Image (cartoon, rainbow, N blue to C red; front, side, top):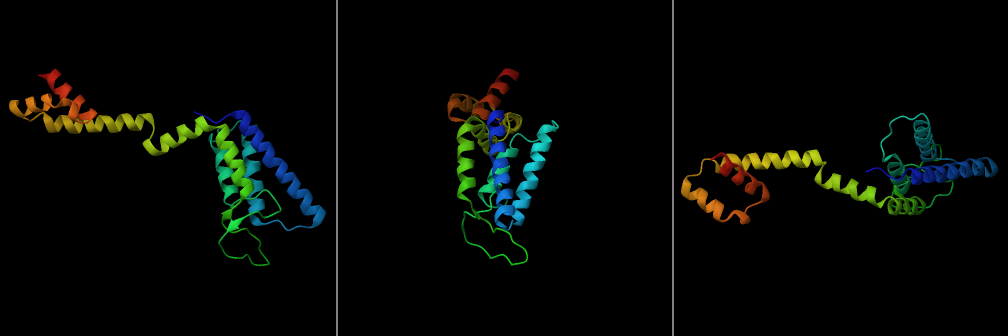
Amino acid sequence: MKPNKIADLIFLSLLGLLIILTVVRHYQFSSILSLNNYLGFTIWSLIVIGRGLKFSLPPYSILVILILFTFNIVNFTVEIFEARIGIESSPDLTFNSLSVNPVGFLLFLIYSIINRRFFRSLIKVLLNGTAEEQALEEEKMVSFYFEKFKDYNEEEFNKLVGNLNEYPEEAQIAIKRIISNK
């Protein structure tokens, strides 16, 4: 499952508008840009160039940049909207410390609502692994139970078959394989 391409383009455009506003404000009002701004501009530029040149970027590149924006690791605005606990920057080198940016958080929430199917599949993969990993894990468990049950004598094996529904699915598959091999 991939995120909505139109939503990706809209969010890249929104971030681009924020960058343009930030640069205009920087020159118009002599506001100071932080390292977070430059990092944000760079990452945004790399994503736009990569998409324009049809490089195979991860489908979640917009998600990553929005998460970084939410935690002020990258920034696309001159104004600093944040809720933070952190250190102050030195006057020579300005940077925004790790904090929550409400604008970034709002954009992240909107993006996640628009791409909720993508988020569900991403969370499922993160928690349970891919379909191949799940199949491999299941086969490993079936092999474990097969090796465990194949040496049972006739009486013990009949008890297993009698209580078949009480065992995990992998154990049931292993028992059925042993029956079909006999």
